[in-house]
Length: 257
Image (cartoon, rainbow, N blue to C red; front, top):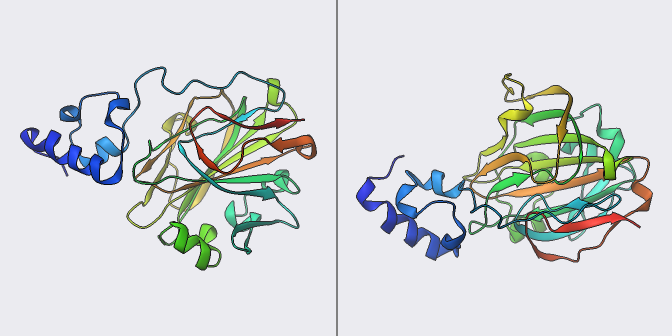
């Protein structure tokens, strides 16, 4: 819903103060954002999120957020929180590429309302598929992830899968954008669709569209969670080098040892 021009700065500055958003990083002055959603999906000033230099198997954070969980994908299972498991195949909507991540790694990144809500490519590679899986809209805060079984495979989500190339040769990388209450929009950027429409429940093959760290991957229309997947033949040598806690777009999460 558009905000009257005379109220934009007042309304948006109060919202930003309430959630702790840093308006000084925003690309535009508050008065130029026409709605709350426009501000929430804001871009940042150029140069604020440089990508870590490439290294062998380097995977960078796709978002500003909180790294809340990580581990190995064992017997097709990932751990949500406090021992609550969920299945890789369900997470990816039975995508035929799901097997690429068996025995690999996952890292879960939570975005709060204060965060920058665009998602960026974490690797060098070729995009192979995108999908959208319809579902529920449970909250994804700490209380919900600790007590709602299979939360990430119950909620609406979008997926993006790439085959690593260059410094990331031998890896496969997946990003699962998990929606939440009031956050139904987990949107894959149009560049990956090739002019096609991504259905509410469906998958599109992507014919090796080049991807570089920092490219636009998608947007959350309000906050939620990204489950990052690392698989492929070199995944056994890949290691997370970043501990749990706050991370920013472009900071290195891990590399091949």
